[in-house]
Image 1 (cartoon, helix red, strand yellow):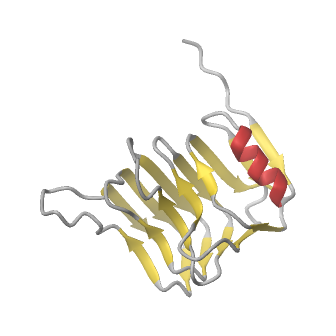
Image 2: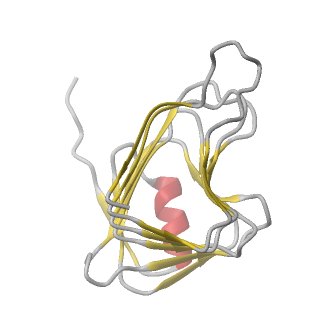
Length: 171
């Protein structure tokens, strides 16, 4: 089958960001222009997406003001998120990333590079029966977060776990 080239969606407003992610095809690139993006509800990641700064020297800032214990980016089965050169801020009581609490029928993957993550309760909160093949944080500053990566929710002593490969480089 022929491969369709990924599209690049350029966004400048929070509404355009949410709409571009919802309407994008798997593999597409969402480019954020410099500026502030205030998001009130979780962004659903159910396909492979690249969310990145249009200019890595002028990092856009996503402020997530959603409910306590909700994630800025909610990982669905087969969701693959690559987040690059973005500032991600929370309210202190919410999560930067989390899979669904139930019905995670397939794995998710997460790559974060050259980002700043601040003011979250959890950077990543995994739940029972959620599984990631890889989680990778590279050249990312994490500050003022109550908890880091929580990958210990499988407690049945059956050899199950929440992530196959976790890479943290130069963070």
